[in-house]
Length: 143
Image (tube, rainbow, N blue to C red; front, side):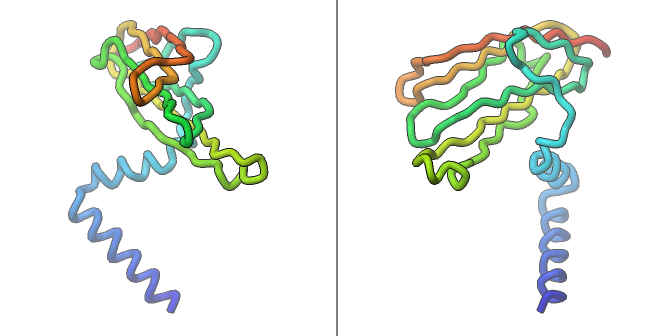
């Protein structure tokens, strides 16, 4: 039985590569392992210096039962792009406290030399008002 399951998975992966292409499969694999990618934390410093191709990240608590979500705004998307936007549900870990807390993990990639601003807001998804806001300057060096 286990051999049949392994063959089924192998055929599924081969089919996915054929249907989606190698680049799409690589993107899926990278997104699945995004926690393992070296990156610079956006934290209290309010600035990050990256080489072109470098990654910076912002990780913060987010509760799905309330209408607030972390939303990002990038001043120049030709310089910085979103590499991954991932939510990790930690409900099973918070069952005793009655919470549905998780983590919002935002990863940004430096695309070209220059300087731009990433603004992160804890926004009410109903009307766009926000309760928290952080602004980070990203300086990108290299070619």
